[in-house]
Length: 218
Image (cartoon, one colour):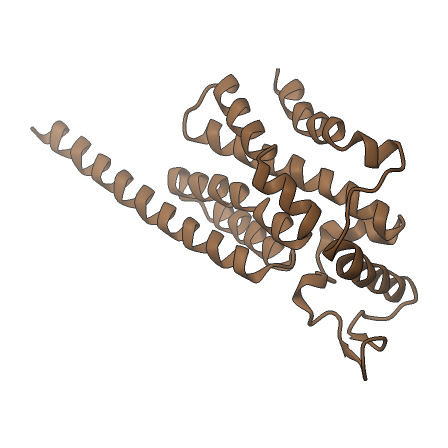
């Protein structure tokens, strides 16, 4: 059923990361430990104290915090940092984004006509891909931004098929959230992919419609 399929996207990363999630082991090292966790910890402390996380006074003579794009200080899916310790929140945020990746890919697969099983296999292949899982442990902002690309393709496909203003709004929301996720290069590459996909699908749909009209008139 649809519920079981969608639960699979959540259960998979829970099984993949059960040791750092439930056994207290470390999942992140290097760059996340030395950069991302301190950034998120400081941003969360400033939010909780009622201040915008705009400035980091602990680096040299001070440095931008929110303007440091990879801090993702205004990204809504970073809300867990307000509730949990930063190192714990980062692991659970990883689960959230891996599930988002699978869900977006599944919805795109279904939108283009794949069956439930085929769409599920494609979704799990992307959600558990070596690039995504390994990149999360080394460079979280890149992986978190990448998680939105499948959602972009799904919402872009729905826009091409239905051509509704509501689909424009949904696609715009997905684009905006990804741009807040913290990695400009990945968002740019994803935007190029989305633009190419929309152009391809628009031309393909227009050609099919012209062919249908010729058949009806012929």
